[in-house]
Length: 268
Image 1 (tube, rainbow, N blue to C red):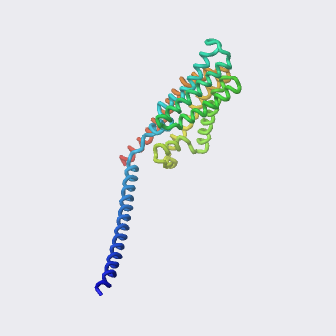
Image 2 (cartoon, rainbow, N blue to C red):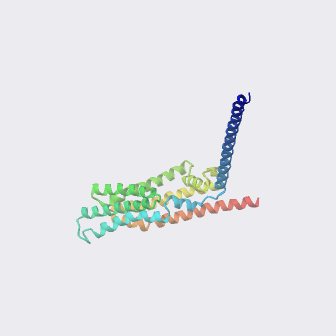
């Protein structure tokens, strides 16, 4: 009798142990999931509480910062220098030969910039965008045999950007306002209900359209005159100062309005 009951008792204990282990592992799994949810919520709250970078910082990052501005100018500078130094008036090469070396230098420098960024595991988006524009301009210049066409895509693109800005103002959807909402207002576009901000974004968008039109207009006039090298010089030495001044004024104007509204809210 005793020997017959022992297996049943052992089996009973084994079943209890199995159930205990099963429930224990289930409880541990639930506890782990709860802990993970708490940690995730804490991290999300921490991210939400962290202040966003300023508008100027975020726009600078989108443009690649100071380094990005310099890198975008290097291929243009290489094209201008090689086209001048290797031309008939200096090195004595024929026009098409000088153009070929200018194109090689420009595209090569753009590829080198992208390669350095890749090697350092840095973002290459700006380098790729710049390379596309340089390659298109180089193709046009070589196909037509005229160095001025190297700058044509950039001129047309700048005019297109100015037109898009003016259209957005006409439809009362100023693009500068959308840019501010994305970069400095956590993606919210609630400025439509804010009359002072809306008016500010309207005239700032017009200002940017005028700024782009002036930059493209000067280059287009030189393009019409056939002054290829002058276009490159203007693009480097004139366009960026105009851009920098417009950008600085935009940041100041928006900050002026938002700061005044914060002071009024604090007083109220």
